[in-house]
Image (cartoon, rainbow, N blue to C red):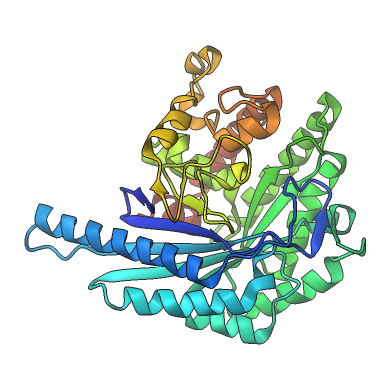
Length: 384
């Protein structure tokens, strides 16, 4: 049931531990419900992951006698807001560590993306002890405009305090920022805010779905903001300085390595499966509980034919196939396409123009930083 990343021998599993959330974000597509994953279901999913890791390890040993293969397992805890089920997460982490301790030469890591409000020093210490990667959802200067709590109250002041605490233990914490079309004018200032806090890495996506409306005027405003971002990225990566703006970094690294954009980070099906609170499998978080997108369950196993059928629906549009930038564009990202157009294989005009913008600006930044011989940037881009 865990899917394989052949390149780095990592088998990945995502557990939706709850569908509850203490936020009511203006762009969120989830229907928050009082649903929690039973502990035994989570353990069964971990058992299956451990079995897949053991099988893969043994297969590699046979294929390469004399070598010691190292297969990594990765477990992500997802919500809603996953830390609403903190006791469950702690139990499953301990259970998973015990299971993987029985597998020779295996390695296990965890990840959680949280809105941050329930973080405390005890859990941050637990995360450090148990190799849990914590990512923080934070929309910067737009936080109080789009990320309110369930009572309609602002959240930025509290989350800012949690960020300060988190950075003391995890200085490389990644910020997950979503851009709402009504507030694109705050993108560059938000990155400046994060850098002032000591943040070294920000990932960014555009809000999509039925709750948001992108217009030509709003995209033009975004384009102007991204021009500012490109200049900030150049300045913040000169010499020994480091600031990772993930949308640019992915474009640059993939180009240097000669990889298609779809080699990462699209998670649809072939990368890792989601296990919902009811035990059903889904190929991506975007499709959880959408009719026709379940691909099996904990009890019944993975429905390979159903997964293959969904994969077969990801057909590259003719215009994209003939585009010179197709290998560098996430035009086959099922999640983004479905969110914008309702079809896994239909690319929205917004996504198309945004990808072109990212490619142009990331190339411009890379050219400047290469010519400037910025050592930390060059080392990072060419690192294995």
